[in-house]
Amino acid sequence: MADRVLTRYDEVLAALKEPRLVQTGEAGPIDEGEQKRKRAEMLAALPAARVDAWRVAILPLALQVLDGLPEDRPVDLVGEFVRPWCAAIAPVIMEAPLKALQTSLTDTLPAFLASALLAMLESKGSLEATPRTVEELLRHAGTVHTLLRTAKEDVKIGGASIEAGERIVLKVAEANHDESRFAEPDKLDPGRREGGHLALGAGEHACAGAVVVRMATAVMLEALSSRLAGGEVAGPVEWYQGATKRWPKKLPALLRRLPSP
Image (cartoon, rainbow, N blue to C red; front, side, top):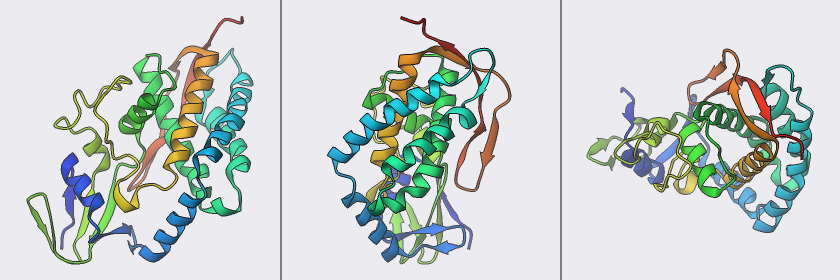
């Protein structure tokens, strides 16, 4: 049976919210009970007060890494900024109830921040550390391009009839650039008013660590805007290209610092 591929925003959103479609890895369906347990545990450990405290604690760490970058040559923003900073913030966040965040801090977060930085450099615009900017970066530069689901029973998505046992390929990146949902979808627009991107999933399987990704992205934007006047890509970008994710492994950039006060 061939996989069913969904690319339109409305179809992908409906599939993400459909409880009869179960999460699937490349090797097959994922244990739903274990996934729900880990998700509930993580969400219980992420009250707003704790996230606000983390925001205060990790901003100086971002500034410290930025201030240590050389000014006389291009820097690899992934190897010299993103990964060192994510490694520095991990001990701040990695308390006992949050062990499930380890993958987010060592994989998901660095990958997205690298993608966001590339999008920012290519846009050549000034991006403020606002919630709307963070959401637009997630929509435009999210690292997850594909998600997999398997139908537990017969189900309809949009006008498509899906049989039990059929595997569904959800093209998340294409849905986030669907022109029927987003005006000028290939443009990074920090003032965009259409919300509802699918970069962090939707429904009961939405990313449990989403609040951490959003918080860290806002902190990164704040740090960059306080230190840099701009920058540009200064060499070939090397990519990780996987079955479900894509992000820059190496991002050479020439940075322009703000004048000293």
